[in-house]
Amino acid sequence: MTVFLLATLDTKGPETQLLRERLQALGIQVCLVDVGCLGTPTVAADISREEVFAAAGTTHHELVVANDRGAAVTAAARGAAQIVKNAHHRNPVQGVLALGGSAGTTIGTAAMRVLPLGIPKLMVSTLASGQVRPYVADKDILMLNSVVDLAGINRISRQVLTNAAAAMAGMVQQQTSFTTRDRPLVAATMFGVTTPCVERARAVLEDAGYEVLVFHATGNGGQAMESLIEEGLLLGVLDLTTTELADELVGGILSAGPNRLTAAARHGIPQVISVGATDMVNFGPPETIPAEFSGRTFYHHNPTVTLMRTTISENQRVGADIARKVSDAKGPVAILLPLRGVSAIDAEGQPFEDLMARQALFDTIKEHAAGVPVLELDHHINDELFAVAAAEHLLGMIQSEQLDQTD
Image 1: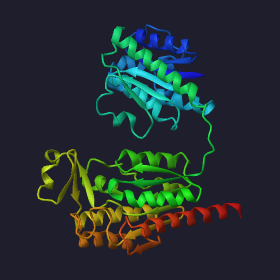
Image 2 (image 1 turned 30 degrees about the vertical axis):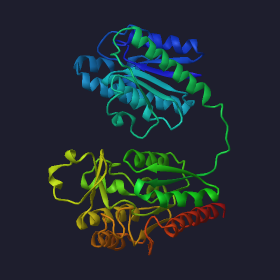
Image 3 (image 1 turned 135 degrees about the vertical axis):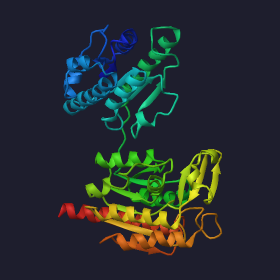
Image 4 (image 1 turned 90 degrees about the vertical axis):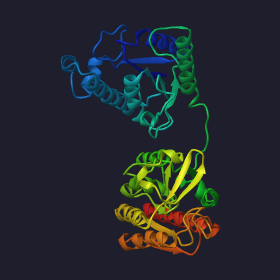
């Protein structure tokens, strides 16, 4: 069992050596990769820094002459990712472990993010107690806080690194010890305000023999789903909660980026799409809301989350974005519109009820979704009949695709 161990061996030599020894003592073979540049390595590597920078399309000599630490880190991240990716194509990588500060974390997680879900990925980092989304993104990366700086071996760093080795060994040794009979996968997107819909739809899909991966539409969830589609793991997508598009277009904090709602269309995966929670844009506590939104309609979901009602013009932008992306779909697709409301707080008597904004969203989708079936259902999104209709529509698409493939 071989694990890739990545470190800057000019600055983290003793710490890396300790990790390697601990892993080897636990029966794990280690491929040590030196991702350092400007200093002198203090530990011998299995893959040298020269090889890392060659994989990045440059040379170690060029980077030393330039003496630009930022450029060196960028190149090391690119080279390490390419080396791990190439190794995985030859023979599946069993795990990646890295350690470091800002540079080491940037490099190590770049290599981890090229691997599929399920392969153990552990980053021992001085940044692990802060905002880690730029490093983790949509991957199953485990961040371990080093507590102290990784500058020498002491009673704290020794214990943290020992635990890291044990954690990686345990993940590698156990990942193939559990066997299950997997069912075909479909994905669904959910927010708290669309939970009743997705839960009911999930039950319909599971009764039909599918395993449903539910993604929380908080930015990272949408990104993770798009990545799994890219990896070819999903037979269908029940994209009922497209709220992340509103955050991307308006400026909320839960955007999944501009490529949200594109992977299934590009790969021809059957998808049923709705407009769950597009009545809202997400912000943090009230004091964090940009001044440009003063005077808007807000709903204080909890002390750390404030929701802002989308306007008519914003709904038109969201509708146009959905229509444009869906119109490019290479596979079967349909849009289901819940005429009585798109979230738990967009309903009769609820704080985000806005018939004109809702209608602007629907009208824009119908106007611009060229050639895409748009079904208007006289239900609220959380009504059981809407949920069942959405799930059954997706099942019909998947079954039709399977029949076409057997002809």
